[in-house]
Length: 489
Ligand code: ADP
Ligand code: ADP
Ligand code: MG
Image (cartoon, rainbow, N blue to C red; front, side, top):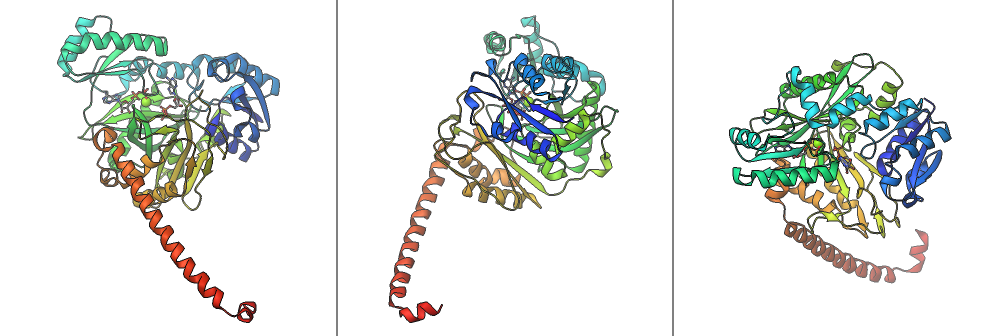
């Protein structure tokens, strides 16, 4: 592979290009009209304009992406995450064009893209599943009966769902039917597929996922877990590796289960098997994401591996150069997703122009971003500005570095999840490791952030006053120093 096209934008496009460059591979960017000045376009060796701002006419256009690859002579395509990364038709079209798709085969993507097909595929592999039905609901009365057996609350889920969308909690039998109707119509409009099923609603779950890596020669390894329980709208905001509650024994069992899920779909490349863990530390298979995950950096920090490099090597047909026994966890890593969202207003998008954009750096800090001061966050795409990753020899150190990195990060022009990240790092539940996916509902309110900001402003004002008083005294002293002495210094 000599030249790869990155069918994506933003931080992930840049991140993939950095590894490609490190490996001596040339890079091709694709971009929409909204991204003419984007950093991934500047960083790439070549760049091809593929259409207007809306994703459907640019980053989601299979034809345009493949045309750009042919035009530039790219022999590999990396899809990143989101966009076409979990589109089996795209993977097939890439291969048909004689280009290597840096990802799993189309069959695995298809199978795991449907939560129902995935459950069906792993059925014979002894994988613990959330109680529920494992087929699309056609007969509502029957579904209601099963829901009663499982016990309310239950969750209605869209089989084709993703990105935290397409889920509805049903509290009791009376609201089953109306919720069901809504879930089906939402699934049709959001995913073009009205298939829904039900799962027991796990009351106090943690989201814990396993990174896996497989080559074309039958080797499948697990790269340990990531804890992703700090979520809003069923979407992750803070992730870490390892999890504060996973013991070596549970890790081994979850790892082995994840490997079996990968084997069930003949998986090749990097993938993630997501699990829910209940209060008794029982874990249940949720779904598999057949791509590089947003939060993959925390795994890279604790394993020392470059997952994009591994993806490229596997796609070239190489055998994995290490065994399960060679892998070990060193230290602890945290990731905060910095979204242009307002934590004071229900985490609603708050895009704008980054009038101030000053980033932290230093030991134990990794920043994956794609912005510079003065740039505008486009309204067309995911509003994530950056992923702030901190590493420490243990969890406390990683958390302390995150606090300091957040303080050193200055953004003006958009509201962001930075102050929320600070709130999490300072919260007793997070620090003690005793939290679940309801962290925000249970502990967070905007008053905390306002209070925090108020305290910070008071501290800043005090510090400013002290500085002024000290400076004033020093200036006076300096003025009295004889000029001859000053010159001798
Ligand atoms: P991850 O699963 O890697 O932790 P997310 O769930 O946030 O991360 O999804 C990764 C990216 O893909 C995000 O940009 C998200 O908006 C997008 N995404 C995931 N699933 C869908 C979907 N079904 N429809 C639209 N966008 C999606
Ligand atoms: P998506 O494809 O949108 O990522 P997932 O099945 O991975 O959907 O679930 C996303 C999140 O929704 C989980 O991390 C968890 O917070 C919540 N969730 C999903 N299924 C359940 C369940 N059965 N009980 C409780 N929470 C759930
Ligand atoms: Mg998921």
